[in-house]
View (cartoon, rainbow over the protein chains, first blue to last red):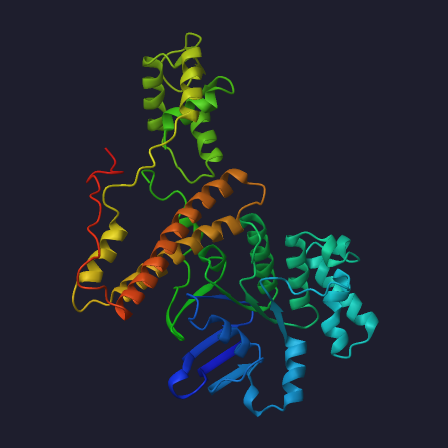
Amino acid sequence: MTTLELRQVSKTYGDGASEVHALRDLDLRVDAGELVAVMGPSGSGKSTLLTIAGTLEDPTSGDVLIDGQLLSVMSRNDRARLRRRSIGFVFQDFNLLAGLTAEENVSLPLELDGQPLKAARAAAHDALEHLGLADRATRFPDELSGGERQRVAIARAVVGDRHLLLADEPSGALDSVNGEAVMRLIRAACQRGVAGVIVTHDAQLASWADRVVFLRDGRVVDQTAPPPPPESLLLSDPAR
Amino acid sequence: MSVRHALLALLSEGPKYGLQLRQEFETRTGEVWPLNVGQVYSTLQRLERDGLVAAEGEAEEGPQRNFRITDTGAAELAEWLRTPPDLSSPPRDELVIKVLVAARLPGVDVRDVVQVHRRHLVELMQQWTRIKDLSATDDVALALVVDAELFRLDGLIRWLDTADGRLKRAAIEPPAAAPAAPLPKLPRRVGARR
C-alpha cells in the first residue's frame, strides 16, 4: 500500500529574475513499511520535499497523495486533521516543548486532535515503551540526554495512528553511536508499518534505508537498487 | 590483515590447536575474514621456524599438535600492536583517476560519472548496515569491523560530494586563463606506498 505519493511535483519560489526552482517534476512513492532516504547537497530541494510531503506547503504544480487521498481537493481543515493524525515529524534539534514531560510531549498531538486525555496518555505511554523510554515518561526534556530526547521525538512522530514519519537530519548533533540508535528505532517503526522518509546528506544514516533517492537541483537523478542478501558480503573473498 | 599476528594474539591467551585457532580467528573478526585451515598451518610453521611459537609435547605433525606462544612471540606481538600500519595513500586511487579522466574528456558528464560511483558506494554501505542491523547488538567485534568499512566508504562518498561541488562551481565560474602564482613543486612520490 502506498502511503505517500508525489506526482510531477514542482515548487517555485519568487518570480522573474529571482525565480528559484526548488523542485522540478519530482515523482516519489513510499509504501507502508518502507524507509526511504533522500540524499542531496544543500539547495538540492531536500527540505522543500519534506515540507510538501508533510502538507506544510503546497506544490506550485503536481499532486500529493497521502493514503491515496489527493491533498489538493481537501479543505484546509481536512488537511490539518490528516496532518495531525497521520504524519509525524522528527527534526534535527528534537523540537520538544521544555515545559512538558516526555509523555506530555508525545501525547500533545493526540490531545490537540481532540482525543480524550486518558486515551492520549495511554497511547503516548505505549509509544514511549516501544522506544525503551517507559521509565523516562515523567522527565522533562532538560532531564534527558540528547539520544533520549530524540527518542521522545520519534515516539511523538509515531504515536497513535500516525504512519508517515518525515525526518530532517534526524541524528542532528548526536554522536555516531546515538545516531545509529535513532536509525535503528526509525527502522523498527517502519517494520511495524510506518512509511518513513528521511532527508540527509549523511551516507551512514541513509544506508539504514531500504531505498536511497538522490536529488540534484530539485530533480530525482538516481536511486539505489534493492539490496542483495547480506550474506553476499560476508565470507566472500578471503583475499580482501 | 596480518594472520601471523592474529594467531599470536590468540595463542597469548593459552595453548591452542590449529583448528581451534581458525575457528576463533573467524569469530573474533566478526566472520568477515574467512581463513582456510591450510593458511593456519602454513602460518604456524613459519611462526615455529622463527621461534615465535612452539609445539607442546611430542605429538607428530598434524592437527593433534598444540601450540603455545614463546617469550619472543609475546614481545613481537606487543611491538606489532603499537606499530602504526602503513596509511600512506596508494599511488593511484582508481576512483580518483576515473573522476579526473571524466572531468577532462569531452562529451562526458563528469557529474553523472560521480553519481554512478556515489550510488554504488551507498549500495555497498546499505549492505554493510544491513549486516549490522541483523547481527546481535552485543557482537562488538562485528560492529567494529562493519563500522570501519562504513567509515571508509563514507569517506569516499564525502570526497565525491566535495568533487561534485567543486566541479559544479568550476563549470559556473571557469578558472582564469593563467594561475596567479606558480604552484610549489611537490615531490612526485609523496605519500606513495613503497
